[in-house]
Length: 188
Image (cartoon, rainbow, N blue to C red):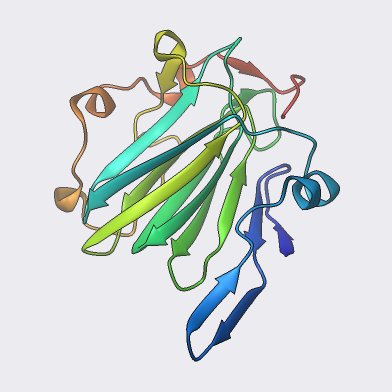
């Protein structure tokens, strides 16, 4: 696997080695051993999958302590624009984001450590999205940041009128209202 560092410490893009032939392809989508050797020492405990249509925006989500999560995300079908926003107070990259196009063709994955809000929007007619989490989902500790917060200024790559949100995501707080993470806290 090829690990690509981004402009924000801890957020990395993973490109698997794909073996195509006349029958299709094969690739190793995850190896705990290689992940620990090349990225960080964390153990994923829960896998999730969602199916969404064009324009569905899920995010920006995070979990509060003591149930903070790191995530490893990928697309099985379709195309998404995936976003990780640094929400760690005191971080030199606070409020900055990384955007990565994840597709069924490029098979890229994005690792998002604790202290980041995560979201994605579907750019294809539909998409199947998978993610691994290193802590269990805790609905009483979920949090969010407003998807169109002007302080962050995310370019979601589709017209705003095409975006479809859940009622919960329509009312997330602004970045300056979120005080959940400190830059000195552990990323994984």
